[in-house]
Length: 108
Image 1 (tube, rainbow, N blue to C red):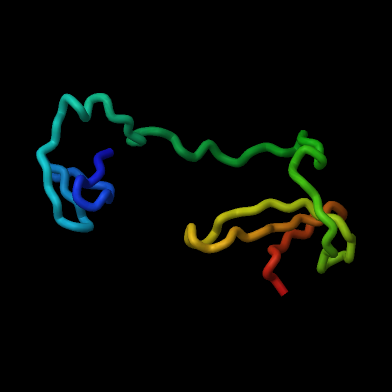
Image 2 (image 1 turned 90 degrees about the vertical axis):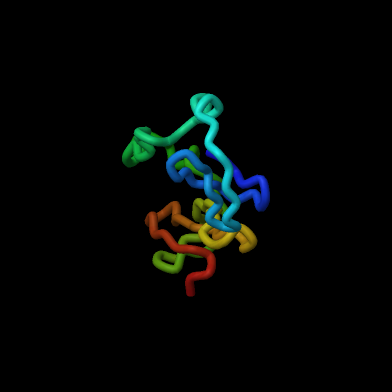
């Protein structure tokens, strides 16, 4: 991976040149330097679903006091996920410890 000296964006290779698609800056490729670069080409990035069947519920994550909209139980596990842009706040997802109903904090 190569980054633009002018604007810092990630550059793309075109034949024997690195080209920045943001500002147009170009520089020659250095094959010696590229030999030591790490690439994701050919790597298996999807290892499939994770088997959670033998994991105790208490080990899955923290719980909080919140009422389940489906069964009314007052405890749920929660996790925070960044689903919008980095400058937006995270979204909290709940899973009822009683009925396994899932919802997110801003659902009504």
